[in-house]
Length: 385
Ligand code: SF4
Image 1 (cartoon, rainbow, N blue to C red):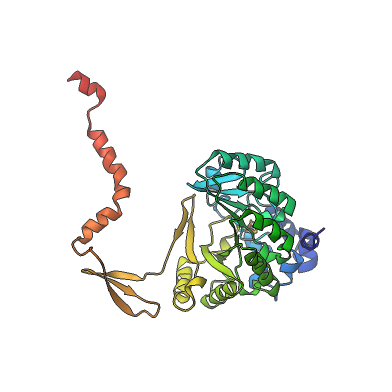
Image 2: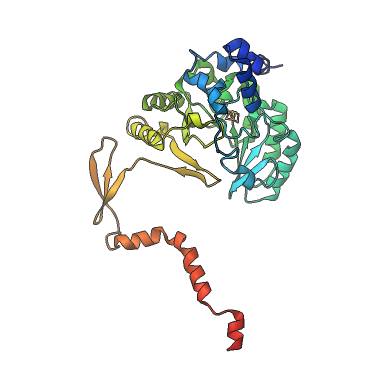
C-alpha cells in the first residue's frame, strides 16, 4: 500500500469521530454524517490552526448545513446534459467524465454532493460506457476527468482510462480535475507522473482556496507535475470566512504562481443545498478582482466566473473598466482609477443605437422571425384563393 493510501485509512470519517475528536453533540454529528459524507485525511487535518479557521470551515461539518433551503441538489443542472451515466456533455467540443465517487477530503461546499461519495451513482461500471460515448462523438476534443477525484483511482486504473482516451484519435486534450495537490499532496508520486507523461498533452486543474494550503508538500507535488510537463491550473471558490478578502486572495494567487500553478478560475460559490453559509455577494468578488489587477502579475489573475444556475455555463464577470465613449474615443480607467481615452478604429460613424441593435441582434432574431411567420397565410388559406 502506498503512503497516500495509508494516510487515507487514518482519516476522520464518521459521526463518531466528530464526537470524539471535535466534541460534537452526538445527534448533530449523526445528522451531518447522513447529510453528506465526512472524510478529512490526516494531512489536511494537520493544516487546521484553530477551530473555525479557513481550513476548518472547508472540511469540518457545520450545523448550518442542516438549515432548510430551497436550493437545488444539482445547481448546474448537469443531469440534463448527461447522455450516459458518467458523462456531462454541455459544451460542443468537450466533456466531463466522472470516473470515481471518492475524494480524499469531502469539501463541505461541494456542488456535486448529490453524487460524490456514492459509488452507486459514479461507478467503475460506467467507465466503458463513457469511453464508448467519447469514441462515438468525433466532435469531442477535450476530456476532463473528474468525480469525485480521479486521483483516488490507483495508477493502474487511471492508466486504463487515460490510455483508453489517448487511443481515441479525436481526443486531443486530457485534463484531470483533482484536489490532491492541495488536500493530499503525497498522492503525487514520481510513479504517477512517469505514467501520466506518456499520454501528453495532459493538463491538471487543481483546487487551492487559501494560502495556508500552499505548504512545502503541496509545492513539491505541483513541481513534480510541472517537471513531468503537465501544466497545472487552479480553480478557487470564493467563500465567506475562507478567502473573501483581497489580501488573502492576493497572497493565495502569488503563492500559487510561485508553486508553478497558474490561477485559472475564481468561482462565485454555486447555489448548493446545504452550502448557503459559504456564499458572498458578487460585489465581494468584483472588489477582489479590482484589488488583484495591476497589483500583481497578470499571470496571477484568474478569471472570475459565475457558473450560471440551471446549466448556462461559466460567465466571466469583471470590474467596470470601460466607462463609456466620447465620439471615436473609448473612456477607460486603470487600476489606480486614472481615466484614459483610447482612440478607437472605424467606429466613429456608428450611432449608439446602431451598436445596441447589433449587440442584441441574436436575442431579437427569434421573436422577429416568429412574427413574420405568424403573418404568413396558412397553406389552407393559400389554396382557397
Ligand atoms: S474534492 Fe471536489 S468533488 Fe470532492 S468533495 Fe471536494 S469539491 Fe467535491
